[in-house]
Image (tube, rainbow, N blue to C red; front, top):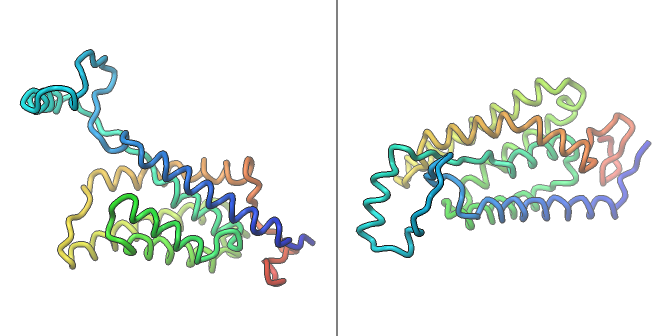
Length: 210
């Protein structure tokens, strides 16, 4: 039987916090969801260093060949994976703080996406024992359903309060990429971070069965 020590418990919580901050750092880099020309060498000076009129002209000329670089939502993927495997490592207070910080830094309506993501994580924690005892398929389906639910509910609430919504096409692409990358996130979580599914003999932080 494996008793979860306080030292490892807080160490893993710190690891998740550090992971979230690293993901946010890369998410804030000015490369995501910005139109860029792929497979094309740009020998012209940056837009910020030329005349505004020329910048607009270059923008119009490049629109036809523009592509969108969209990354999956690694933060929510890791939060889901950890919530299923080791709920004690990602308590609600920690998740709430991280998700709220994400809302603020990404200039989303504060609290809405954070609340939806927290509800999803807490639901996965409640179903964690069932998902841990089953194969990976049901877990992947549950994660996909919650990702879609977050996207849908977020857009519904924003519409009701008359707040501009993110572009639907970009949101759907991000959702699809997140679903596709989730098995990789689980692999990284299991192999490289040591966050594995609890066994029937393991104890949680309060001495109960995991």
